[in-house]
Length: 80
Image (tube, rainbow, N blue to C red; front, side, top):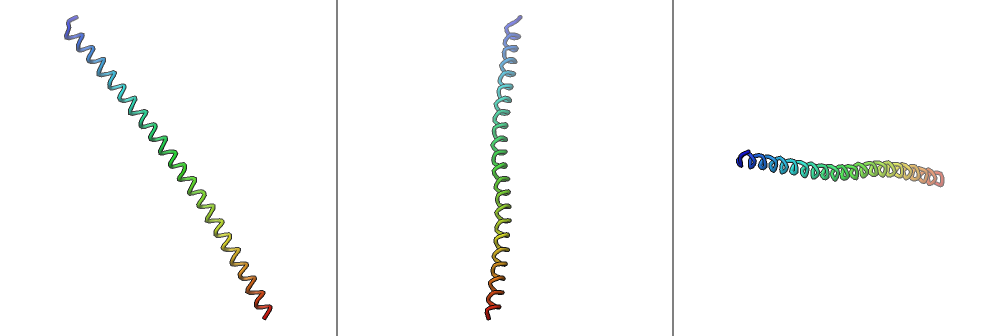
């Protein structure tokens, strides 16, 4: 084999190795970033669920306050 063929083969091997290494590194970084985004989305969804439950509790308490105020008004009217 001539020197130019050997150099061309070595260049090809180096290029392929570098390209594959770059692809693997990019793939790992992309997977890491996707995992981090999934964690943020899970936290957000958890917050939404908690806020929905809190709003339900607030509405229930508001209704109880209205009932209590109505009962107080009825008692005051009976007293008069």
